[in-house]
Amino acid sequence: MHSQIQSFNLGMLRSEVTLEDHNPLWSKAFEFLEDKLSEVCGPTFEFYHVGSTSVPGISAKPILDVLGVAQSLEALDQIKSKIESLGFFLEGRVWNFGP
Image (cartoon, rainbow, N blue to C red; front, side):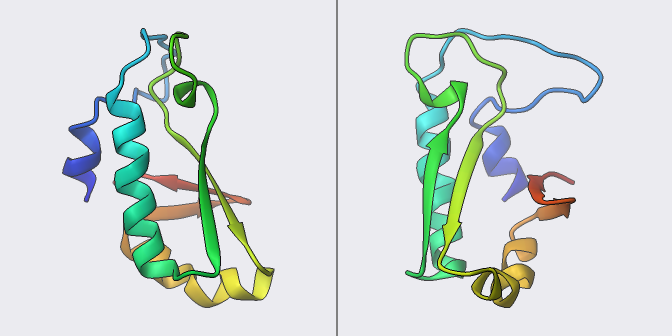
């Protein structure tokens, strides 16, 4: 899945900050991620594209912010390994994606 995400022109090195003109591929990337996450999480979770990449017409860091809403923390604990199988990893209370 990592190579598919890269095809949406997302990401940057941790040591740099770049702003890019809005890219319509960012909403396509969200749709792709939403589909993958919904497949493994099931109908009790909802996902929203938030942050600057979700706003057409403004510059943004090429980092996709996705808000996931679970019905309970217990439900999230039950699917943690499924989310990790997609390439996400937990840092504190934030899920990140990467190698």
